[in-house]
Image (cartoon, rainbow, N blue to C red; front, top):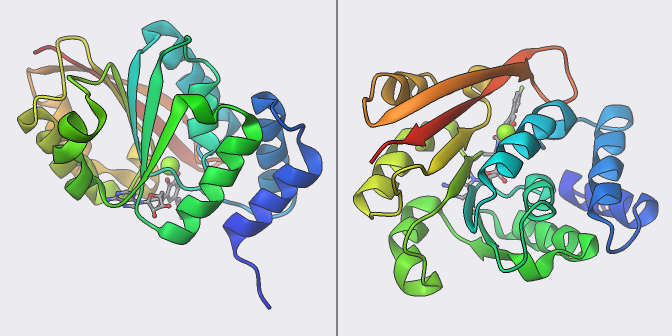
Length: 214
Ligand SMILES: C[C@H](C[C@H]1O[C@@H](n2cnc3c(N)ncnc32)[C@H](O)[C@@H]1O)NC(=O)c1cc(-c2ccc(F)cc2)cc(O)c1O
Ligand SMILES: [Mg+2]
């Protein structure tokens, strides 16, 4: 019977990566997606930009929207200081089940809480369920038309603080034009665009980094 793409990515990790070694998990996924089949991980080029922003912020509390197979969750969590936490939200249960296994294989499961459900339902529950007062860093990588409503929801739920950094994937491809319009014309945010390419391709894409000014 036919396997799914996330299942094939997990198999590639189990075959080619070293258990407990996050960098080998990242390399195994990138190699598979470059040479076997494309998949919508943030990838190595944008992933290096993600790494540099995470290292600069050194966040204690991180929210990721749109886990997919856990590639960016592994990238982020491997850079977090002891005691820091990443909460990652994935809507699709079958995909979440794969992501859980990839995160565990990388050995960084103690830093990551994977929550199944939709961002719109879960963001209002972050304070009560996870004891979060505010997030230091947020990675937006879910449905591109949810970037604006979920950013507004994060504001309304008091989950942003002066200096919170938002980093949005795919602002060019598939594109998040409403998000760029919202965040770049909003005096409560200071934004900067990092040009790159769609993962594993030569197609233009990039990341938008925005600092909440309070
Ligand atoms: C949206 C997906 C990523 C995951 O997000 C979960 N999700 C959704 N909405 C919610 C929610 N509201 N709450 C929680 N999770 C949620 C979902 O189930 C996917 O697993 N990402 C993409 O679609 C994506 C697509 C492309 C892409 C680019 C060029 C092409 F020709 C084709 C595809 C590139 C990328 O880099 C992406 O990131
Ligand atoms: Mg993406």
